[in-house]
Amino acid sequence: MHHYTKKHLRALALALAATTMLSACGGDDDGYPTLNGEKPLVVGHRGASGYRPEHTLESYLLAIQMGADFIEPDLVATQDGQLVARHEPNITNTTDVSTRPEFAARRTTKIVDGVSETGWFASDFTLAELKTLFARQTNAARDQSYNQQFRIPTLQEVLDLARSESTRQGRTIGVIPETKHPTFHEGLNLALEDRLLAILATYGYTQKSSPVVVQSFEVSNLKYLRSKSQIRLVQLVDGDSVDKDGVMQLVAPYDKPYDFAVKGDARTFADLLTPAGLAEIKTYADMIGPWKPYLISTRQVDANNDGQPDDLNGDGRIDERDRVAMPATSVIRDAHAAGLMVVPYTFRNELPGLPSDDKGDPASEYKRFYAAGVDGVFSDFPDTAVGAR
Image (cartoon, rainbow, N blue to C red; front, side, top):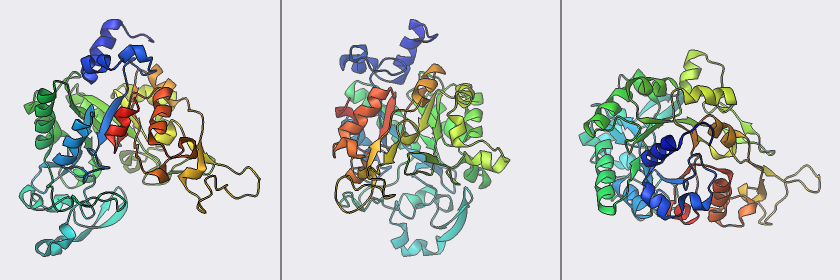
């Protein structure tokens, strides 16, 4: 397997997940074309966010119960410098804050990564104030019955949950936090990185073998983290959209890491996935987390050449269900050649998101990516991801 020794591979496999569980599930016997030959990892994206309001202890617990290897808290900072799990600094859509008269005056407008946003922001609330809010399901198509039940957790509460459940279940459950908008937080004098490292250190999580991996869409903060800790890191790779031919579209703010935009660095996210870009990532990170079309894209079909996309399922509308999957790009192969694991996002069960190849079966999409060699997946529905392995 390239230049890796068996000892190195064994250490990597041990660090990444419960190897006993993975080998019990088949491991090498299944012949997965992953970097380490193990079954791909399942990351509960914001927990089991297909079933519960995202970034709540209840969502994370359900993901663990469904067999997820990792749970994923996105981290933002409160006014008093505490790290809490929210998808964005703007908490308008993920909480009931807009209905709370005592916080009406906190509504404001901020610039986040060059984009003006109006609403309520975590950085304008103390942790104690945020703890009075309830989480909400942001996707109208998903179960709304758990709204007004669950609170916003701190990073420590998420780490404690993973640790206690690891003990209870007899398997390692990792935590894969994302530092959200590091440049934005730095501008508020609420930089995330040292706060995160300090918390992780109290758990003894400072090594590659620690059950924690940190992700970011920015680059300079990952390089900073690598200079301070050996904890494993993931370079996330975004994009704006995919055109009718399956070509990635790069439009700000989804065209490049925001710290690149601030510094005038001309490179885009796509540049990070070239062999040269991957070689640089390997100098500071252990994995890449690309938006999944970078690995396997989809395209529209125009079989009759009338200039209009064909309505493949005949439902009178054109959406993802009328697109077909394309062959895998070279990104997985190139990343593995560089020694990087590949964990794409985001896998969901909702049928409008599945190309025609899958015929409404979300397991089919997972199997396509597993066969292509991904080392893991970020999934809103961890039970489906686990079941498809």
